[in-house]
Length: 619
Image (cartoon, rainbow, N blue to C red):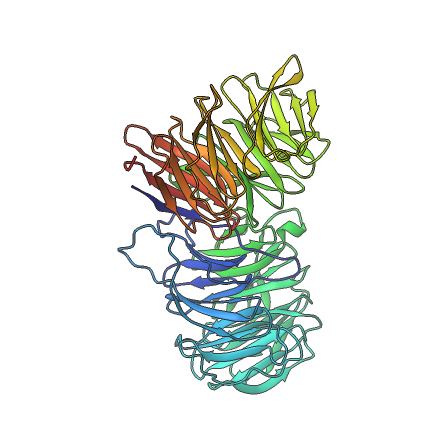
């Protein structure tokens, strides 16, 4: 009698051109952490690991940095408002699947602008957070009490990165937009020296070697500069280390480090000899999407982050292409479709990603992107196992096939939804118009109407049902002889209809309004079956019927997932706060009528995909 969490599939890290993202690795539990939107995600390095991913979404602003504590039990994350939160990510063996938020241990207002980088000392007691500010660009404090343990001084502009020497006596180094490396002694940390004149452009990242002997900085000037880890004095530099700006650095061992660059490559270097050891290429084609803006080293892999959000896994002893690439969405998910075990999602930036579903619950760890639109994806239709139809606000409808090249047609405006009738005719809904297309995307019918519409569906007889936002009602049309013909109009509702879903047996039409209330109609006689499906508190964005037409799962801007029953309309199963900023897509991935149970896949405006186990025995 519940909706229970099953699996979480996180979005890819957010990246911005010309900006690096400092990834963090938990060596104790083999996990990485990264920010995405207003959330922070923790996931296992091994994509096949059974360790569940974690989403932390208690920041009120966009998260800009996240770093593991040395013991792996805590994460310090900072956002664009300058707020830093310390929260628990310890693994408990007796945990059942849960999407509950990790508990916050402490939080502090550190700066007046975005946090760019956070570093812990080896004891896991002291934290330094740096970034943009007004009167200061960084602060050092104890993680539990927030007590100040020194001052971060010496910079005249934004600090991009900070590192703390991993052994006593502790030292710290910061680098930034002012082309300087500032060295600190401590704790309490205090200014020791400012090293200038070696970098000629913005410095992006800085790291101490594992033994503390060296500290190395990299920047947009394609330079690698090596300093003494104990004194901060300049030792040597490597010029033109890459053919593009360098965004990240991570140490492999005491005398070898790796760098990631805008030239689409990862390189390893011997610090003693100042020579390149190996080059790892993401792609033979140099492009903005393949710029490497983040890097972390694990015992088995170099994991680099591309501008397009891909996480590229290179094995240490390989110089070929990545062993595998984890792809996904970076933006709010706006459309979903499910056929068999393949889930296709589209996002607000036009990206399209195909993801496999395992046993109706979990997700394949390596989704495969197969194309994109130039803008917002408004509708996806999985026609068959090998054909997907998509529509986007680039005014295109596209047909993607596994065995053939994709085809497309230019539309007369922005499409809202695409459906397919039993005779393979595609119907495309626009704001105030319907168009019909053949399988080869040849237009065969068109109808303009005097109202605007938000959604469309069809029944078992290919009769069309669409919302009328002018008269607040449901309109019915038929298509025959290449002509749309009005059939009937339903009575007006109290508010704007947002969505219509016709049951698989063609008996019911469920219409949800902008306030989340449903009106369920009997299609045969147009009578109202119930108006008691009224547990949403905001606009419904998507809904899906079970295969036997007995239940409908619904989600929307109120962030909740609800399951309604036709037989018991006053009863509802609910999971509130299912997605941080709203539920934008829902599908039944499996359903067993006899066992009165099923699994649901949901997608959110937070970019997250989740699966849920539904117990319908209460009905």
